[in-house]
Length: 399
Image (cartoon, rainbow, N blue to C red; front, top):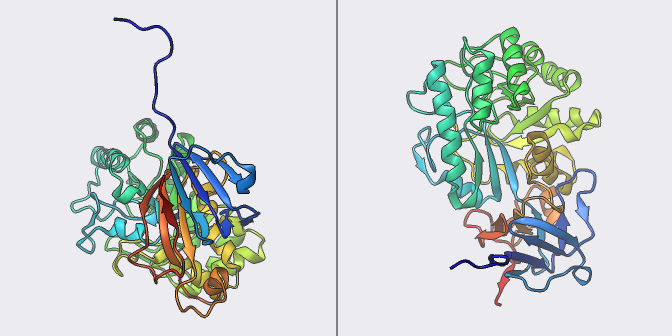
């Protein structure tokens, strides 16, 4: 039997977050918003403002933030995934889920270079990249979005290889310099091909990180002109200070500061970018898993370190790990604004912190406590198992 008229569809999934004490937007130009409520529909932010001005009726889920801070989910701009939620570098299971408990909702691969027996021939490296892209698109540990499938450049690649990769859904290159391409001329040509087809590039910066890699100095970084200067503070070994300053001054590209790098060099890059009035270029990553392990709280630690020792306000440091990275990486997350993904982290002062409030505690170097993480409008975790306990935590209200 046929039926005329419109077919019934499922009602929209409406999330209302109310009673927000501090709304951290992730936007460097306006890091704190005068708002206490966020409404999301089907995983996308619909409205941000005062509760009295918004339509909060008919919510599928209502969360009382209990006066805690709401920030965009954190983005790790530099990870090295391999297969599922396992890393052979440390033989550790569940590392991505642990990072979720550190507030990370999005990760960007800088290459699946720890894959045992990693293919280095062109057919194999393309197949591996497409497999990783497909795998992590479908598999999201705890809800975390991992943008994987980042092929490492090898000698002999031609323009059609990048066209093929882009058509298959690959959006990022692995670190230039970790493969057999180790000169700026070849790197520049391949990065340009990648850019032509919408694939973003990152270059290794500093001393070798794994056997087979090599020093990448400022001259190769500048000549290659990749979109992201990967771990500008070294991964692990940093370039000399004058070369780091030169990269800040002479390149317009993103400056990525990572946890698994040289902290002093990271502070130098931050200070140089601030003096150039180019903080919008600074993005954060962990460069994990690596020889020093997996750091579930790595991005939070970077925020606290850069705020307390780099003398930037905590709300600005949070932008480096959210909106800055989203803009540089062309991701639809990282900002609490209409039409962005509804991925959030609820933060509050850690219990017994010397800070008088959340922002003051971060600026004093303390890690915040996480009370809840939401990805695409759905609660992924409640109180974190990894951060120090938050003083207050949000509550999911019963319908």
